[in-house]
Length: 165
Image (cartoon, rainbow, N blue to C red; front, side, top):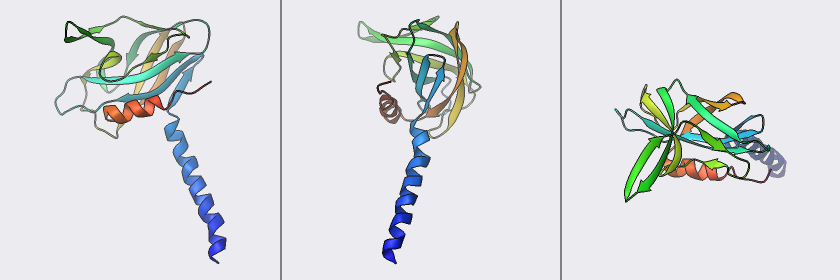
């Protein structure tokens, strides 16, 4: 009788694996543009702004140009670049971000490109999510679901999305 339960147990484990797989495949496509693992980091109560991160790659031959973003989670969303200048971390808005097939963009906490959520409606709480619309020149808009995760967890999960096409 115990041996008859084994196939049922195996089927149950397989079903559990199948159920969790879509959660790992957190990406979206707009024509030849791939958006992988959009995530934001939690914010403390009262923080006016938050950061969102994602990976953008292009499979086609022409570059994709990110020209804007919006979300109901904040009053506005700006594309920012952050870098060190004479030992001081500086953040500045950029009007657009060009992504070429040879140079995908990998946004991560701690430096480089990211999306600033300006004037948050409420703090970003770990485990929650919110919609984010990305606008690309000549390609249109795509809505993605942004997961709120701590910086390390989100970065590791995003790194897991890099695979051969």
